[in-house]
Structures are given as structure tokens and as C-alpha cells.
Image (cartoon, rainbow, N blue to C red; front, side, top):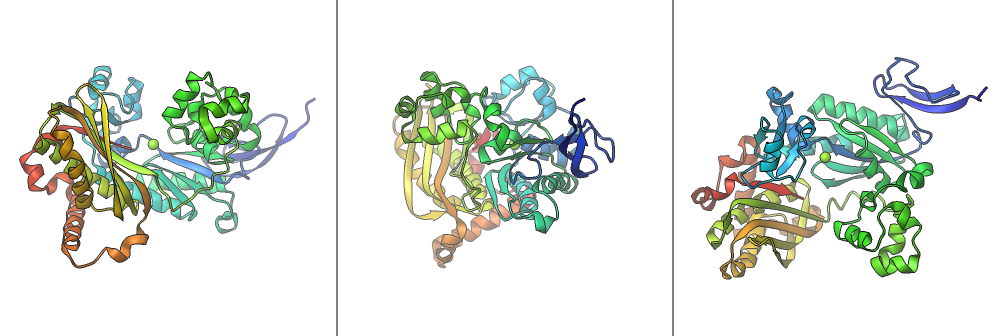
Length: 440
Ligand SMILES: [Mg+2]
């Protein structure tokens, strides 16, 4: 007869947690008999989590309008716009994020298409973030709907393991806000990020240190957190497709492809990731872009789109308490070639009118070339925490007046919707309002 072993078990329904002696992993909860349990040898030891909202924009729309609950919902749209988010019902028809809207509607013609309401999503995102911060100050937002948390040292405060605290948090977010999130608990950030994607929606998935290397071996290199698309392409071209390929690589050969990053990426492929959860730096860059329903050529038309995107971008920076020191304009020509132009600022900012002024300077020369454009984007990087510049924020000059005007506009839009108040430029050129924006 097989020997009994001790299994770590956590019930997602009644919340009971503990060790169970059995000859095989238990199928159900000893207390409530629910089969919705998680059992993992490292369950009570792991402290790093990645929390990702499920189909965030679409979930907020369903939350705000219960009539949509059992309908396929797509957030995004416009003739040539793309899907910004698709609910899980729409996904059953093959609709995916970033898919052109016409293609999404071909797959799911009865989908309800809703224009994004960024101000609303930012507000809900902040409420979710507040819930996260009630568990630990070590919250590192990655984007509007996802964040890393480090719960080490919180056991005494919460009187339970991080796993139990996170499961409770998941329930609280659903009860208070009506949004489901998926939780990945891992031995480090890269593993936690992968884990949150494995059990969606409303998921809870664990990847421990002991199993990491085996678990990663068959996965494509693209699953590793922090490996960009360009690096994946380079690796693929050099014959490194899976994490196992990276682990087995000869380091000098890999260095020819990755340079000084080779060692770090080899370690990641083995499940080793020493990067800490750093609450100060929310994201390295933030951008908004829009694909037009017809190509645009004139400076005035493009400028109107630019202004609207700068407003959105500024709201996201303000929501994340961030300021940016570099602004990048992106244009996609009618022949799909991409042009980018950047400018660095003397003082970091989160103000739309300043981002817009820089954007205008970058845009003007491009519109003198007589070309048509199908996409315009504005992005910022070199982000920093806001507290650093607040001293320079109120100088009583012209900028201060514009800042206050902008704050008043954003506050109205937050309450009543983005269209409640517009600049004269937006009003006279409503051209851009029908396009769908995507953010990164
Ligand atoms: Mg998400």
C-alpha cells in the first residue's frame, strides 16, 4: 500500500486551509466538500503574485449595465478600428484583443460594440488598486488592469498565508466592485505573471520554484516576462524556440544573439528571476494610438486626433501618479510604414496641454511631406513618480491656469463622460471620435 503524504490544501469556496494526510492529492475540501480547491506543496510559502483583471474594459461595461451580462461584448470599434477588449462570450466566437473590428464582427455579428470609456476604466482600476494596497504596500502596477504584489512579511498582519490573503482579496474585489480578477502566485515575478494567465477567468494558479524548470521547458520563449517581441524574433531566427532551447544553449553562441542579456534570459528560462516588486515604477512607457476609419492627410485633422489622445494619455499618467520626460509621436503611413519622432523635456510632466504642444511640434514637419496616414499614436517614457515635481507645479503663471482648466475638464469628464466637454478643435473636427483607440 502507498504511504500517506501531507498535502497543502486551500478551498476557494469556504476558504479553509491546511494540511491533509492522504495517499493521493485530495479531490475535494474536507470541510465543505467543494471540488474548487488548490493543492500545491509551496502554496503556503510563496509571496509574489500577479493579479490581472479578466477582459477588463468589457467587464466594466457589463458591471455598469447588467443587461449586457449574457451578451457578447466588444469594447473598441470603428470601421477600421481594433478590438480593445472582448468579453469571454465574444471570445467563444474567436474574437480577440487587437483584432480588426470588422473581422471580430464577422465572427460574432450579434456582438454589442461599445466605445471605450477610459475615464471610467481608470476610476475602477484605482478602486481595485486600493484593494491591493490594503494587502501590501509593495504593489507594482504594470498597466491599467494588472499589477505585481509582494506579500512577504505580511503573514502576521493578515494572520494567514499570502495565498489565503490573495484568495480573500479576489472575493472582496468581486463583491465590492463586481469585477473578476485572475491571480498567479509564483516563486518570482516571471512565474507569477505566467501563472495568472493559466486559469482565466477568476483564476488562481500556482507555479512554485521546484517545478519551474520542468514547467517552463516546453513553453515558447515568449512566455518569459520582460522578453519583447523583437527579442523573441531574434531568438526564433537563431533557432531558440522553447525555454528548453535556451537552457541547453551554449552561452557564447547565445551572447551573439542577445549580447549582455544572455545570462539573464537563460536564467529566466530556468525559472530564476531576481527582479524585485518595485512600487515606484509603474510602467516604463505609456501610449495611446488610434487607427482612422479613413486615411488623414491635413495637419488640422491629425492635430485634432493628437489633442484627444494627449488628453487620454495625461489622464492615465495622472491616474498612475506618474510624470513623463520623453514624448514620442508615432505615425503609420498609408503604405503601413511606421514613422516615430521623439523629444525629451526639461521637466517631466503629466499635463495634456504640454504633451500636446510637444506633439504638435513633432507632427508639423511630417504633414508637410504630402503623405496620408492611417494611424497616429502618442506615447511617453522615462516615467517617474509624481511627488518629484510637485514643487514646480504651481507657479501661478500661464501654465498654472492651463493646469487648473485641464483638471476641471478631467473632473467633469470623469463624472459625465468624455464627450461632455470638448475643445473647439475637437468640436469642429469630430472626425476622430468614431475611431477606436488602443492603449499600451
Ligand atoms: Mg487583463
